[in-house]
Length: 380
Ligand SMILES: NC(=O)c1ccc[n+]([C@@H]2O[C@H](COP(=O)([O-])OP(=O)(O)OC[C@H]3O[C@@H](n4cnc5c(N)ncnc54)[C@H](OP(=O)(O)O)[C@@H]3O)[C@@H](O)[C@H]2O)c1
Image 1: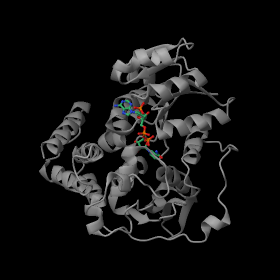
Image 2 (image 1 turned 45 degrees about the vertical axis):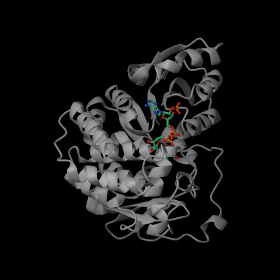
Image 3 (image 1 turned 90 degrees about the vertical axis):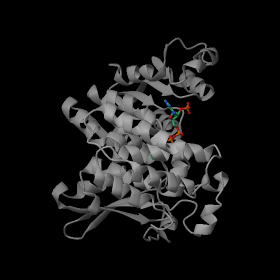
Image 4 (image 1 turned 180 degrees about the vertical axis):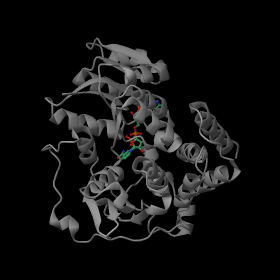
């Protein structure tokens, strides 16, 4: 029996995690969960799952949550401190990190410092503070299991050889809704166009990140930290069908890949049940889905995000945190109709160019770089 804390249960990954957990009542018990704002869904989840305690980031909505979840008598915490407290609690031994953006950094880091197993979907903290998170995991004996489908695929494929035999890691990208659009079409892209992902059904921020390929950019840095591969050995191939999630090339030129339907329940289940594989309710991949698998190189001129990632990653220090925060801020401005789609590229590029990176010697240095980048983007 694994005892779970689910950070971000009301999000796309959180909802899929609860579906996986519901299939294996003798394997998992949810001890705590967190939400940001969506108390209507959260109350429904809490009444169904009945955790011991919960935390809600926005303290103002707690009274409404208590009204909606009357009949459940667990403890309700609020704010960032509340999220950190449930992530650290001793009742759970496995934390699913599924908050979106930098908001997940403090609770995820707290869980690592308590020596828990942590299934990480929330890639932004790894981008911001990867070395710090890995050092915390090492020092406190915690295990990080990737939930991001590409990294889960690398994790599985890498088992076919020795780490020192890995020559290259290939992350696949669907290419998003603008894969075949011209630059002129991208310049006038609307929010509705950008939110229409061709293969995956996800939260708004990652859907926009997929449209800009910034999601893949963040994943390059995530892969560098998780698998200790140099940036020169990480490639992105556009694969519109989203069936092959990642590949690992070994020193003899063999490539080992992991395949599956584009459904996050698969990597979530693997990360939760690892090292076991359990029969689940996931649909199998059938031959008709395999007929037309295609791969192409990304267009770096229309999608400069990948170059931003290689640049920020190689510069290191606070540069990846600036990349991440500038992007989060720019995506938020785009979703609030304050900038155009391609304005996201401009803001992130300008922030990286204006930033002088510093070594990451403390959490405060990371948070200061994050604040600086957000303010820089807002001020443009
Ligand atoms: N969706 C996918 O298929 C997918 C795949 C791979 C990786 N990921 C990664 O997984 C993470 C979650 O993605 P998602 O698509 O599930 O996002 P989402 O649907 O937008 O959900 C985000 C979750 O974070 C909570 N949240 C938002 N702001 C918060 C804050 N300031 N403090 C505390 N909680 C907050 C939300 O709460 P409320 O809704 O209650 O406000 C919700 O529970 C992201 O880092 C994403 O890159 C997602």
